[in-house]
Image (cartoon, rainbow, N blue to C red; front, top):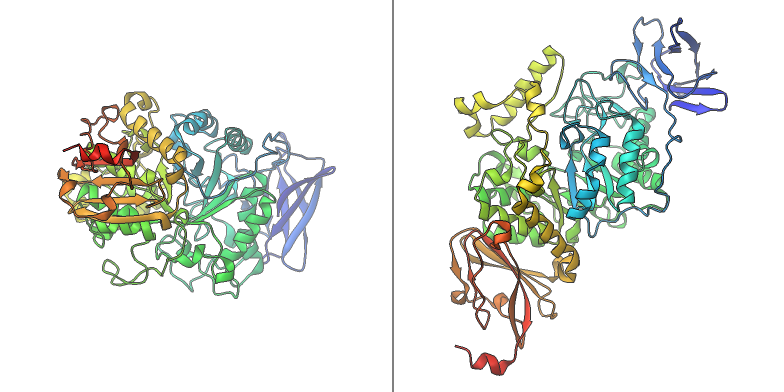
Length: 622
């Protein structure tokens, strides 16, 4: 569908079954627009050839006798935004250099969530591309771009996209996005894209002008009208083909499917399965990642097809986030209230993935989740920050601003050494001072509704209803909300301690075979105190690693009767990493005494490995 370059001109195809007549109206240089009638086919598709035109041509559609002209719903570019003309794009014009790129697999990935508009001061694909080498050097392996499908206004998160085939003009032209992906591949970085198939934004959404069954009232959706995947095959195809489009024409290495619990489909074959098939087919020999966000925590999404699953690769794990957040901030309002941040919760989240696997969930007053046993650890994406969770604080505050420096370092170590797939949010790696607020630029009437909706959402947090706090909160349509979120990349140097912490932990994760294995079946955990716990990796293999996390007071572990603390046979423990290293802003680490007698400082994490010693020497030591 859309505008396709062919010999001698451009072929236009438009799915518009509710229309009897369709014309493509082509803009000319200073002259009268040129109109060409398209021929209707049996399935409601209109088709026609316009000769003598090529890439760069601007066009819209006239539908029956409607005086208004409409943009192409399969437009590859909207140079003036979603309400205006579409532009013919030649997807083959870009000179790719990634022919040998094999794609990416899940194991070993370190994801980095990026919003192009605020990642740099310029907010463009080109400026972000210049920073890719630094991200790679820091230990990032895969960029996860927040949605880039065209949306209205001057700024936004991208989740109200309306032209799903058109990379937004706000960040650059389509070939500049291609250049971003191509450069990433040259550096060994993957790039996956956040896509929204559960609703479309309200402004600039003209799909119902072409077909009656793009949306449905059969299901509920908190963000807008749900997509109707059941009634009209052409509508279903519009979204399924989009999943392949980003992989094929722009060489993305996969997709992050937003809020899949709101992708409703009672068809014999769920549309998510078709999207999976189309995306993998579009990749050809390349391997791609398909990641799902799913609030009800339906683990079946990542189980293999032969086991009745959907065959996706990974799931976001909110349970780990919520427990970690409560553990380091001691705040448990709203949806945080069902996790207590206890050591056992954190051990269980690392070992088993979700905390709620079908049992009662007090916050929602119903059961939540399904069994996730047997799912390998990399299938759970772990994070302590993401776009939603930062924005759900009082003023878009990041985690390091909500807890102590020591606790922040300790929880970072846990995140980056856990066997799950870690994800950082842009700027997290250097303790960015920029907030991340909810921002969306809409026309005045809609802006008021969006602001009210945002206010209704945060009302679940009692502390955010304080008058003084409310006075600090910027309206989503206020340009200051957007501008304040732009990163200052110079903070990489000014916040060197936090940056070095992240880089060194990622190096340890990458280079240490025990951590790099990402095997939760090698992992055992134990509670050491009210706010302390341990994780022992590869127990009994000789490559044991002991991760000790203490979010409370100092502990003398010689007083703890716990077998997982025992050194390896004929050996002892040595320090491989300490968050209390002065290099990271810490105050130093007490030496380990013989026999594995460890003093674990408060608000710290310690990584230990085996250090062989002679038993005779041990016998002579106090």
